Image 1: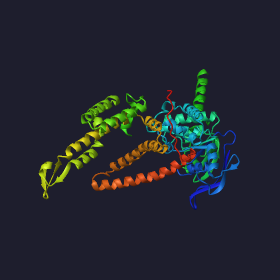
Image 2: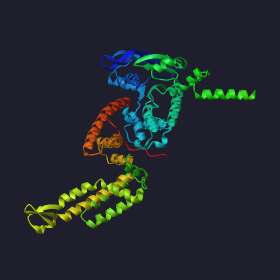
Image 3: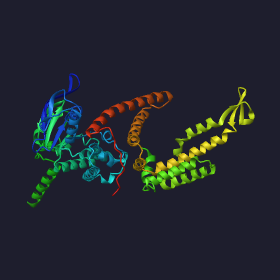
Length: 275
Length: 233
């Protein structure tokens, strides 16, 4: 579990980006935690604090009950436990060939070659990018690059995976794949923290939410707790997911995701036909 | 995107061992710099024809790639063959200038032409190698030659980031062009200076982001480049 206690962070003095944040990530039954906030709300800054790349100016972060220490060795241990994938794929792929880049972190850990090969093969299969393993990076699509960037962190087999705006710039197919991938990872026991302002995506995938606005957590809870207050979301420059809108405006039940809606409506239709 | 790079992955001999291709290139270089001129001429024609055959590139496009080197080559030849002399007899096409004669030196002309043929032969051979060898194979070749890791690392990183750099350059250039940034020499110079400034700023911003990404991947100061794994697909 990751816990923040009264964490503040400021790039410039007296202009804090994060203001006195206290929260717990990864309590029971919270496998995908969503951090929702508009541009400039401090999502990325929060993530950089979670992996020790930035140090809170006040407060402390605890991982499994132990406060983060900022020595080089301690940070390496932390990053084996908490992996992070950034928004811009081009800034985190360093090798020119896909499988070389995915193996990069494992070479840095000085693992034996056989182990590296096995882990890389496994991740390539898991992310469905085996066919591009020998391709040069510059010929990949945005969605493929994103998956290569994620693969490069997944090989570390960290307990936590932080995804910063994973759907930014992806086409609908890329988004669908991302959704499926995250569901698969969680089914395998991966814990994920994801930040985004793609409301429908977040509504569909996360099981716990924190709404971040102006460096503060303004609301947190589960699906039915955080999305019903339209005014609050508008004030945060966000909007309600469409499933919540049809729930409130058309008085349909609140469905957990698209599939849920279609399944239930279909069985209702069938029921009516039989009558 | 560099079109030239695409051919390296789609040519007829892409699966040849990089060592063989390296050896062929080396032989071509030896022929290019040995003293017999007609051999060089044959080399140019043969290798150029072979390049067009194996890469299936159109003749027009192939010739266009030589525009890049032609100015350099011509300038060096011009610099060698044109000279000032006191006597008319040492020159072809002498022009009387400031009490001396200016023209093409009889002694230097063959040397200049020889240089031209030599360089052309070397360039044609190098194009052949570059157009038929995918980058991963070039890395394999460097690794099996036991070159220092620093050189290999540098080569690998350059190949990765040159494309990002070219892309940024083109994006900025296009945006400036759309807003008439290159209408005349004055605005062109101004736009170009802004372009360079922006590229420099981007380097600083990207540097910071990449440092974070390297930290996340536990970078310890070395990019390991080993031999590629045998393909099983």
